[in-house]
Image (cartoon, rainbow, N blue to C red; front, side, top):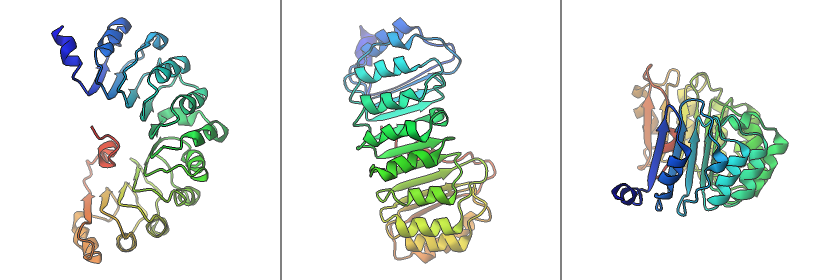
Length: 294
């Protein structure tokens, strides 16, 4: 009884298991979390769970994250989403048993979804599969990991989806992708992160600064092509910019921070973060871009 009382006061719960969960125990555990708003489930190893049996409704749940849940299938996902229709944030990472049909399930069950990350599922789907996401008229945040960023951003931009936070992980950034991003006029936070060479160019920076009028945060990591002069022009042109965060940008060091700030001394609220450490592992994108506000 004491444990159930404690669980009833939880608002955020991160479940991690290296061996998998006992489904009945998990159901009983979650049934006690009546005030839970955020749930993250992480199965480290390949675990065969019958997710169709996890018929748990968590009345206040608005955020659901799956990490390494290789046994989650389309039917199990649909059941969970139908039982928790008030979800606003959905993150699917390495749910390799999901098929392209999961995209339609998400659009059908969660029309009011605001934040979405499809994880590796995005590598399985084509442009036709993604078009149903045009129904997500309330979506404000999109995370693309190792996927066809051009296809999904095309769907969002062509249908006027009000994306404010765009996060690109391990995604190439050709000219065509920049053109699509420029159509997302409501973007406030943009992050382009990679552990290799991101092909963001000086010309891309100029276009982003001049054509995204609401851009307040920009994060760029591991790019070998941008120059200090282009970054100076970027901070001058991005009139409402409040944060520029640079991580392992070739030839840009902490010594360049004053040079950049000098260009925008009229913007007293601008913060510039530069990390040129060889051991840097990249940004905490969820927290940095305010996608995980709990």
